Image (cartoon, rainbow, N blue to C red; front, side, top):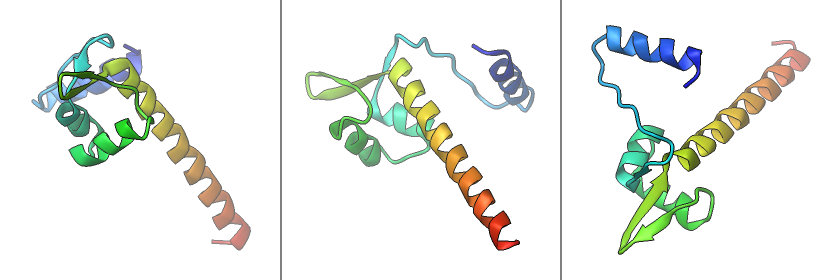
Length: 96
């Protein structure tokens, strides 16, 4: 875990919010992944079925490795930052 993440988690603990530490090798359910991503479970299932996030099936249940979920979150963050920078550059060119 990076230092910036630790201090962020310490702030959450100071505010008495619940945090959980999950090993990157652990597998989680689609419901847990949806909560961590702030998305609906059906949308997470769509991401899995579309091959955007790797998963495996245990019987009829889908399991996602935390490592894969973290990778997806990082990609989302990068895309959002690039979009924000592009929007800001466009705003500057229009003189906003």
